[in-house]
Length: 150
Image (cartoon, rainbow, N blue to C red; front, side, top):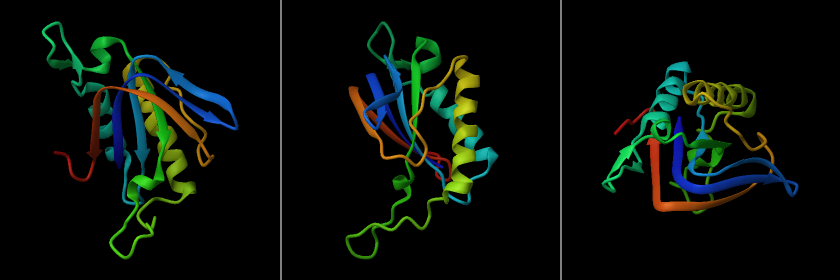
């Protein structure tokens, strides 16, 4: 599982000009799932996202998590995180899990985030053409990979 995490002061996702999910300060989480992912990958990633210390404390040091700040999480399914561009200039999506696998896994991931956060996690619409609007705070942007935890 791959996640592109961005610390935001606000973010929203729209489908057909309708807002499907929006947050104030917190994390925008773009999540990609591959066929090799398991429940263990989802659990690890939910724990890492919720506990990653990317928010500043009173001394200005990134020492607080979204749990510590009471922030929110907006999750958006993003199969293109598994794009391969080794051959030519047109990406292929062979490593991304097909929808019948990735949709229930994404929903389980969102449920795990909500359980850890103690509040609902708004999302986009799985498989839809979405417009994601955000104000990146910092900017802070991190790539997380459950198969290559660094």
